[in-house]
Amino acid sequence: MESKVKILVLIFVSITIVGCATSTKVTYEISSEPLQAPVDVDGVNMGITPTTATLECSKKWVGVMNSPDGWANASGKYEIKAYPPIGFSGQSQSKNIDPCQWNGEGNPSIQFDLGLEKVAPTQKIEITTNNNNNSNTQKSIEALRTLRDSGVLTDEEYKAKVLELVQ
Image 1 (spheres, rainbow, N blue to C red):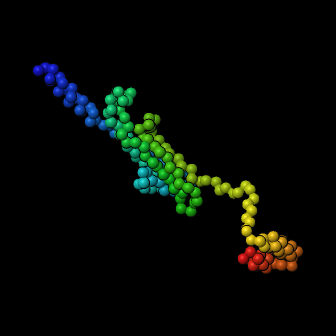
Image 2 (cartoon, one colour):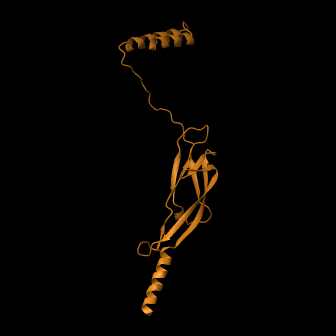
Image 3 (cartoon, rainbow, N blue to C red):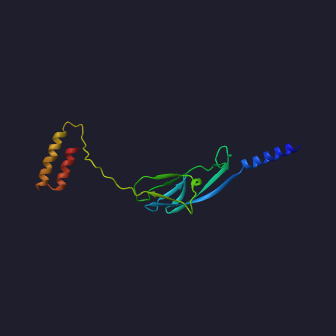
């Protein structure tokens, strides 16, 4: 009879521990360059930078056979996405965050650098057409440029004549 009681107690304790879960919340400070960037977490709008997002770290008991300390992450990763502010060009940026990995002091921070530098082409780009009159058109444009540079044609007249030739 005593062994049956021990088995029942062991089963009860096992069920209780297996059903256990622990949860903590981690608040991230989110900033960006430039400021006022819209931010969302897993598709939910969190406002504009600078802002904060509180993410949940859930762990569940999986046993020491499956994890060194017996606990496993149950909440997974969050996708935090920042978009360029109104009036700025660029692309959105996203970061995958696992709040269960934070073990530092205070609140962790996330920085987005949306102030991407404008890039100009570094090579000359030539555009050609399959038009048989291309060389004649090119010669005519060069002649018009010479007339404009010598003062015979104004800039407006030059542009109008070039447009006529190209069309």
